[in-house]
Length: 397
Image 1 (cartoon, rainbow, N blue to C red):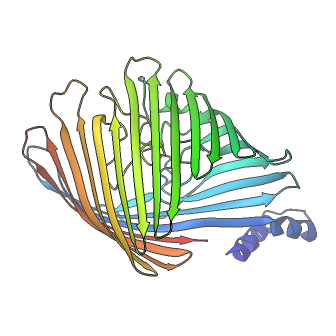
Image 2: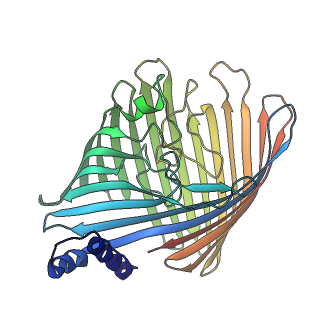
Image 3: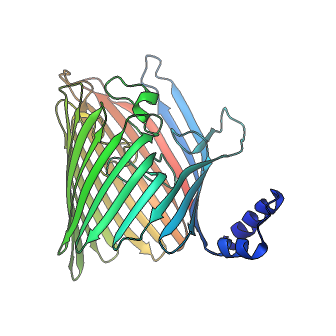
């Protein structure tokens, strides 16, 4: 793959009529590292629409996303980075999703999402300047299949022994279009993405425990902080893990409190593994992440706690590595929450699904997932949301 990309770059420059000599060009291309992912996902869901008709709605889609990252060493201290996505060409998803019932086949749209320079001339320090992924606990900087939050600005990371310090400023982001929270305080999508962002973080390792604290402020929108502690303990036959995170987000133009406390416990013994997760949000609000896949949120398949009011979230997983390349698991998730802060009854949304994950090789894997979901609003009779299935295939290079 690397050789193919290098030859393609050489051909493109030659066609463009460059006057550069062959030797310097060959030297430049030789310093390019190529990596990325290619994902295909098929979703098949038969959802019962929550309306007076109660009619079923078939949702079958083919989804594609190809991500390629190019890293070129400019000199001993500077590296140029470019990330190219082939998907929908839409910042809201970055994924080409085609409904098999209503859409014809279509080609992927190519877009450049990262174009920056990384400076490492200072010992134990990296400074990234330009268009880049938003590397914060509230956003998803890169995702092989899903939303990616990006922005233009400067990010600095410096490691001092067991402590790493981080600081960043962005004067423009795609947050008005990408993520699960695209409007706050009445800002439209364009206004939301145009707000300046300042963030700072500190991360430390103390024995088996990793600690982190981050603060972020979006101009005329909100400020938020998150605290996290996680640890892993190897007790001979059993490996235990624990993670606790608390996140608070305050809107600049509202008295609404948004916070989420989440706890996750994991265990692995022989071929078996288990996970138990719980989260709770404030009675006024639970919007604490700009993307529901971010670290400050917690989610299963379709159930997550981000944005939910006065919520209790549970997730239980039992799995087994039945073969060196095959893992099976049973998963259950539930969220009880209020539709509004003044609601007297809670809505319950739960899902149950099984998953088979096959790791054919180090760079090629896939899974099959099948489950059912149900929603009950207050005292209203439970409504079956239907069966859901998914096929996911991922190639890494």
